[in-house]
Length: 355
Image (tube, rainbow, N blue to C red; front, top):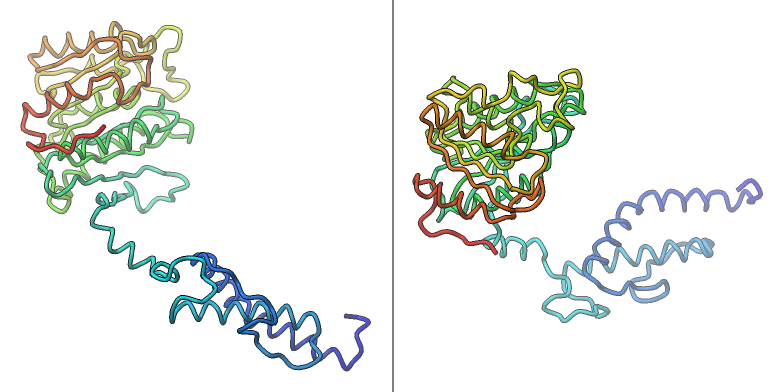
């Protein structure tokens, strides 16, 4: 202080030095005590740290904070007398409890960056691999493309929830977070991500314990378009073994009131999956709600089904009331999809049924 006497200046300096020395310990100790749920000691009580005379009220504050350090240290040796919790739980080792309960947790998803040499602020594409329980694992895998009109990626109801369902069938689910038009990544950036993702899955099939000959694609809405385009590939390293399209966009010029425009970065008409069907196109499971007025069966799955059938490609088409566009896993279609997958030997004999 500018008004402090010369005799008090050294003490002020000592106080600053002491605070700087003990501040990190105080922060950690307060956190430890709060986690343990215990009452904190007050200045003047047990654990008070004596200070040189002359520190006044500042010294009391330091003493109170120092007592926190003492109390936190006591937690390591046993439950403090001021703890509100019963002795078996006070000062518990939460890390040990976590290790004990880990056996009840599902396998933790793994993340795989598509282009690790590119700044993620520019390229956010990533694969998230959800492994099934070991006793259900069949070796089959599904690469999931969520929807979002290529402007965003709906990772919740068309990504994570889909992965959990597939895991319950014993199938490894790999969700692709692809690049978006709104991030400055115009088409065909999304198709490039899908093709690279498929190559990555097959290249890592042994390490990921996946059968490279049983890898399907599954897409919702715009992700359904992406899955259909991936299924049209002739490169065996990219072409999936099955395709599952849920309320997909097939004809990019529909609906007429909201067509995709090339000038905005969307796919051109020539990149409509029904125009690219060939005899080698993988078998398809298609589903759409009769209440869907955005990606209707009339303009999308029906023309695709007709082209697939004409090319001799097996196809199952589920059309019925299931809600508006974007209903996700609702509507009952997933039970029929499970039956379709089971008939091909992709589903575990004993499933983990979800509510």
